[in-house]
Length: 421
Ligand SMILES: Cc1ncc(COP(=O)(O)O)c(C=O)c1O
Figure (cartoon, protein in one colour):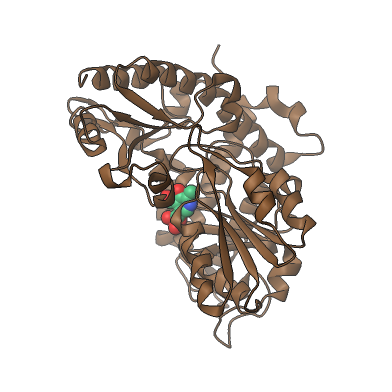
């Protein structure tokens, strides 16, 4: 029996019955943004209809609104296993949060201080750090192995020095799916006294995150990639958030998270994030019990969330193996990233490929005409397509599975691809 019972799972996502090309649309565009369950839509419209108010008022709607914002911070703290909800900062998206924090960190750095970034990362975890070269900070790039798109830890270790102040690395690549060994990288970074900044945007919908076990210093993610609304979330160690000087207006709070939550936040999005976390916790309660043993010391919603993500991981893996086996059997298909099933714990279910004789855009259009939604190009992971030598010819096709996708959808996508051969 499957780890997840897909029929009650899918029935919660209204988008999954949208018709295109005469059949329900197939959403393999999750790495660009996932669909949301009805409870998220309800929470957002309820917020706007019944609780819509600015922060800190003496009246009922403002108090209720503030309670929702507090609950959203607590929910994200549970999702990431943060030590406290005060370590959770909401923002418009991961990119804006990373720019804001990189500037706050940058103002503490001196000319000659070093930052390590990687070629495997989305530009949102590169450009903000590269911008600090304006202040004389030296930014170095860690390479990846183009054969299987895994990060070269030897290169990372070799480039660390007593001048390294921060290492910025992705938990998983949104282009080719590689999962990086974050705990190991944290140890390397801390050995030279550097902070570790983790971009968990692509990883978050696919596996449990535990910032305390990873021992990173900052971690960013985007709820719209894990069944919530468009928004961004930053976790940082409280002492670091407290010590950094935020770019803020005078009346705003001086303590985390307020000092980094500049201006009025998208309250309805936080209501939606809270609902998305509750959706996942319910999934964990329903399907995740077999995984409880993996999370000693966890209880309540924290345990339910870990179980949910473990169940999602266990559901996605065989589905993705089936997908990759089908892709590799297509004549003229070039596959990028880890393809050895035994190492699939080192990747997400996001496939990057090209089809001989067709541009990635042509493949995406062919699939779109048949109701299969995938992306083509570089997905802002520009350094990846450049390193692979594919940028000038249109990058890759990216088809990413989520826990609401089915084997039938995978088979249909494979059949559509075979038509192009
Ligand atoms: C790995 C990764 N990092 C960062 C981002 C940027 O996130 P946001 O859109 O929240 O700024 C994305 C978006 O696709 C991503 O996939």
